[in-house]
Length: 432
Ligand SMILES: NC(=O)c1ccc[n+]([C@@H]2O[C@H](COP(=O)([O-])OP(=O)(O)OC[C@H]3O[C@@H](n4cnc5c(N)ncnc54)[C@H](O)[C@@H]3O)[C@@H](O)[C@H]2O)c1
Ligand SMILES: O=c1ccn([C@@H]2O[C@H](COP(=O)(O)OP(=O)(O)O[C@H]3O[C@H](CO)[C@@H](O)[C@H](O)[C@H]3O)[C@@H](O)[C@H]2O)c(=O)[nH]1
Image 1 (cartoon, rainbow, N blue to C red):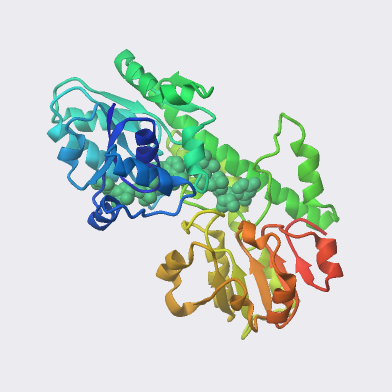
Image 2: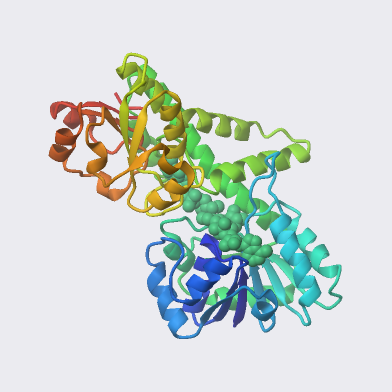
């Protein structure tokens, strides 16, 4: 099939590359000339495990091309995916200007039947708005389909190639047939394509992200309670996770959820509910708990340093909002950095992939070094992201570099008893 993907960010590049991998001819369109030039020259623009190999192969084989020219990009495409940003507007609702702007443009250039697919995360009713924006100028036949994306950064290729499910919202038989054919290779791997109406598909995406965010906030509250009652959240997590109705995944407490999706999508769903005159009480609590949790370690650090961090040097491991990505959007580590600087501390930071993106935001207000150099003469180490290389570090190097053997662990990487035996002052989340 011939496919166009408009918006070549995390979702667009993964989507385009993975569709090319199953034999389709894909043109990715973006307004960012620099990005398109790099991609056309074979230089990948995001860090995503496993993507580069597929990207290079499909680029070389001519199934994957990049352009800034939307008209050239879509003219022979049967299906056009919109993988455009939907950032939060000032009131928390999803900003649809990118999606509707492109839809308007498509209406001016379309000449034959096409399926336009909303892959961006968009509120209920957006498919109808996209339809209207196109129909303003294009009077021929076309369909707008909702196909929300559930991939996670860091495992995006696997999630895309072997999805738990594919959700497709459409009432058009013609569009359903095309989408069915497109996703056939994935269905053959045993994963269902669930067809439904557009509105339900749009809401499914927000419900999924909000439910997962709720699981995390719930566990973060259980962790708070554990600290007060002397219980161990790891035990409680295992104790409840083995119940299949609850499930083992997404029960890890820490310093809150971040990323480009959960924070904005929970906010947008709460706003949608408000607009529908329904007060979604749980979502408000999910957001409130997350805000508090992001700074959960701060009082512990201050208490250890007798109330003041003035002049203290804090080393920070982990800047990306989660491991295996260079994405720092809404990273809890950033809230931690801001709080530490506000308290008068200096910060030196390390992340395996996200230093360049952090520098763009914090510049010289913090310093950057490699994993162990960053600890030199630091008063304490704070861990904000659970990268694998932090899981079994060289503790001798850590203790040699740090001024004091003090670790505040926002991701519960180490065993508290072992740490105490090694002579560390070690504090984590929800554990004695
Ligand atoms: N990042 C994720 O893990 C993820 C997963 C599922 C769904 N989503 C959703 O997918 C959508 C895209 O997210 P993302 O993380 O890929 O965003 P992104 O910011 O990484 O990428 C968006 C791309 O669109 C381009 N763009 C902006 N305006 C354009 C225009 N007029 N024409 C062509 N290109 C244009 C930008 O230059 C950028 O390259 C959002 O709605 C997001 O909520 C994201
Ligand atoms: O038990 C857990 C699991 C995750 N997190 C945090 O939650 C955030 C999000 O993690 P994750 O969901 O793995 O990453 P994303 O790439 O943001 O993926 C989410 O957001 C995407 C964009 O909508 C969806 O497509 C995915 O299905 C959804 O998992 C990160 O800050 C994690 O540290 C926890 O604190 N505890």
